[in-house]
Amino acid sequence: MKKNILPLILIISLAACNPQPEIDDVTMLDGTQINDLSLLEPADYLVSYALPFPTEEQKNTPVLIAAHGYSATTFEWDELREYADSKGTFLVSQVLLGGHGRDYADFKAASWQDWQSSIREEYLRLRAAGFKHISLAGSSTGAPLIVELFTSDFFTKNGAPDEVFLIDPIVVSGNKTLVLVGLLGPVLGYTTTDLDEGEKGKWYVFRPQESLKQLMELIDLTRRNLQKGITLSPGTNLTIFKSEIDRTADPVSAVMLHKGLRTATGQQVDIQMIPSELHVFTRLRGRDTVTDQDRIHQANAFATME
Image 1 (cartoon, rainbow, N blue to C red):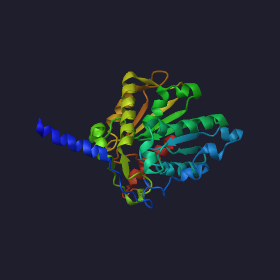
Image 2 (image 1 turned 90 degrees about the vertical axis):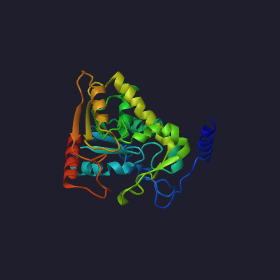
Image 3 (image 1 turned 135 degrees about the vertical axis):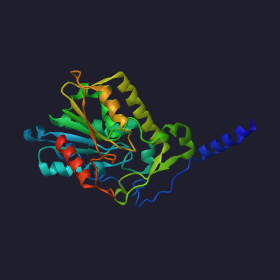
Image 4 (image 1 turned 180 degrees about the vertical axis):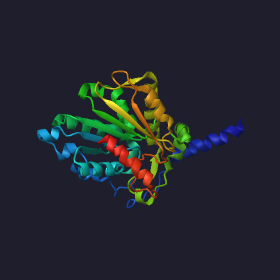
């Protein structure tokens, strides 16, 4: 019995410390000086702000709401917006997930419902402005946030999207130690992520255990809902894109989504497995190494989303 007391006391003592990371305010997204630019110039990122009073022609132009992943920023979808600008056939609304793009304290305090709120709000603003063809794209954690909108009847109340695209969706984490966050989270306080040079200031370096718990809550809820079966809104099509090798979102995530999702007519959703090792293969900017094949996969996905 005595052998078990000291480890228990140590764990309680460490939990009470609740370690705080050392944050560089100048270079880290976690700090108070670096913020996502969409907070400063929302009209450069959100169609609802850029076109609050659209013409009839603009109302008929397709709009794609793009939601990034956990601990990321709107940077994750910059290349899609640039692609859309070059084509001139559709518009991209880059939403910043709630609690993201701000300092560590905001990130730590936000729930997954807070993350999702910016997707909901942009969708409602676009509908209110009169846009008739709205679709959504979610990368990584952005995917289950969008899927949950079908189970909560959000689209039943506010009109169905035309298309939904899920890029490397996470339903099962590739990091198997994430399941221990409930036990070890209070002891560790946070985890640290290594970033490529071009990613610094665009992703959080430190991931507070509170936010990791929210991530686990979201993906656990998504798995349970998929086991029950999720039916899409009438008129909505959904496509899953999944890298075959993904250390962040286990490829079985795509299988679970493919099995658990059905169109309103009972059909299976489309799935495309991509011969890639990149998590969120549609985002190439900021990575240290990008191949010609990576660029082809990105271009093909963007063409499908157009």
